[in-house]
Length: 327
Ligand SMILES: NC(=O)c1ccc[n+]([C@@H]2O[C@H](COP(=O)([O-])OP(=O)(O)OC[C@H]3O[C@@H](n4cnc5c(N)ncnc54)[C@H](OP(=O)(O)O)[C@@H]3O)[C@@H](O)[C@H]2O)c1
Figure 1: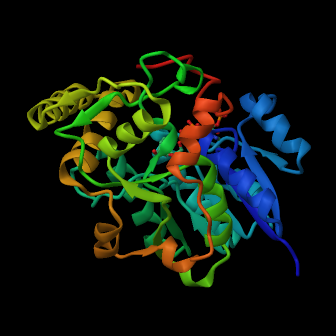
Figure 2: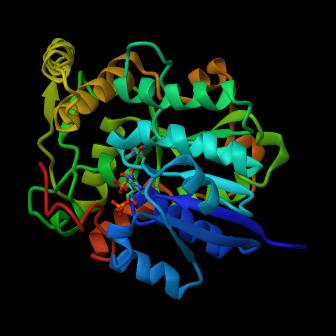
Figure 3: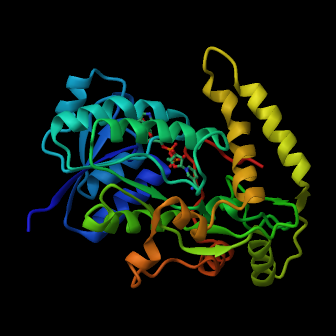
């Protein structure tokens, strides 16, 4: 059978590398990466090229005809642009329609949340989904819950700091609101199945590894490490205050992406920490298919396995190309 030609946008990023790995490991795909000229020498890209990824150089801000050329012969486009770049997908979606792309996977890959004023990030992504539907481009929206890699607390001893570029030391309320979590490395493995599955065309899919709570993760880290954690308990009123302040701070003209980071963080806490949105039951209510039902044989990395890796010193930090540590 001929291999499926997949073009990845954001292949040098965290989600993009997971997806490139997932496609390469699964086999049956010819993997292309759309790379802006300034990034062609990035070490992350050279590694992918060595493993067979073919580069097409083009910036997402290029004219539509140029974007359509970069998409020539491509069956599936998967976009993993960074958080503040969601709007850059509008033109490439239009170009994908012109180029006859058979399925477009817009950059979703976040937690479950209904659109319309709860999470700005969600609403930015929904603008892209609406555009795709208006131009009648076949699509699949894939959300993944919260990465293990940013949901794990530090240890007082500092033993995990080598892989803790973004740690979670806060518990909202008593920390027991259930939430879905996924190992970043499993996202690509799910995606490799979903993008060629006829059942997922023009659907939303929730692909997650496990449901637990932040307090449950803290307890697991304590049990496996033997160290006592000192979480920062954040009352619900503080989250509401953070959301109000971050919204006021970011709503300025002209648009300034750097002002949105506190807003993303606060609105995530509102959605998964207080509202309890990020769970499979609510995803189903919103119309998502559940990857656990679609792929019952899928063996995800468990949270315990990830923590054991961290403790063994063999885990990998995220965003190490741009930040050394944030907490
Ligand atoms: N579920 C979770 O817990 C979680 C956590 C973090 C992020 N996310 C979501 O995952 C998505 C991907 O985030 P990430 O953190 O994985 O991304 P990332 O590491 O920041 O990477 C972003 C990618 O987009 C590319 N890109 C941006 N603008 C471009 C342009 N104009 N032309 C071509 N390429 C461009 C970048 O290329 P360059 O190399 O050229 O810069 C990079 O490869 C985000 O939308 C975010 O909402 C989810």
